[in-house]
Length: 358
Image 1: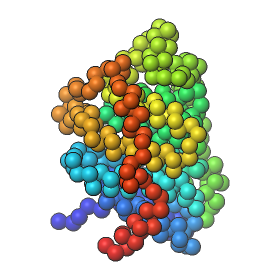
Image 2 (image 1 turned 90 degrees about the vertical axis):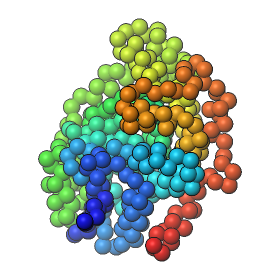
Image 3 (image 1 turned 90 degrees about the horizontal axis):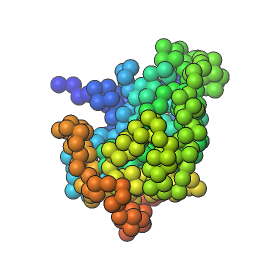
Image 4 (image 1 turned 180 degrees about the vertical axis):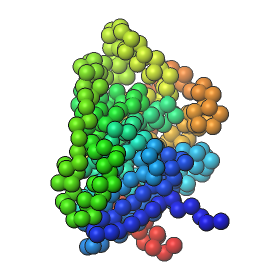
């Protein structure tokens, strides 16, 4: 039987194209794929024949729905695996953020979790389509918006990033551009034409502009004043209190949504986004590494995965059960440095040497 290739690559006329090729899994990325992505991107960065890099997902449904959650669940208790999987993911995110050549993510379809990490952190040229569905729904699983998401969530206007992180709300193309998460909207049926233009040697910025269209009105722009009143506050308890003062269908539904998600994750997410406002992406990723590993020692993430992805009863048993009973000292403790285990981006060089020897 022929082994399925999970990463497709091509280099043609100066354009390197990396395709996530797990459409049956919504192009979720596993650890082996992160290793391969890192190797390809570092090789292309050093290759003078490569002028720009395009990243896309196979199929029409999803760019990338995130990391491979079930692989993490299956390896519960394996500390070495947890260190490796989060380290590999975060160093790829950082590499994309500092990439020395034009990097063009085609965010067509579902973009969630780890999919945001390999797209939003590009400095510019982030392309969405009319099929884009963007969300950071991690608190519903007992995790938090990681992959350095606190970096862009904390910088979104009108406290929209805090709203996204605490509710997992879904954004369309216009919303992503309004929120600073994407830069351009190109119709999905024009993406191949865009790639052909790049192959012809057209300047990436000029080519994107040529196929760009107006994404239409952003729903979040209408909701922005209420979002800022309710989510631009000093604490998670203040969010709930302000939503209660709003007293309307939107505010009541939002409260119910917030309370349905993991209370510990909600408190952790609020603090992480608030803390990230003055941090570099590297600092955000180092913090995320600490938080992710510490959550792997708790039950909530595995309970969320059971309820949402495995048994699908959608009835997780969170501990603690409510936002009001979260121990804030335990939240603070999650942010403390790891003893001799903190994420370091000097490790990138070691990773490359390790990969070459395989």
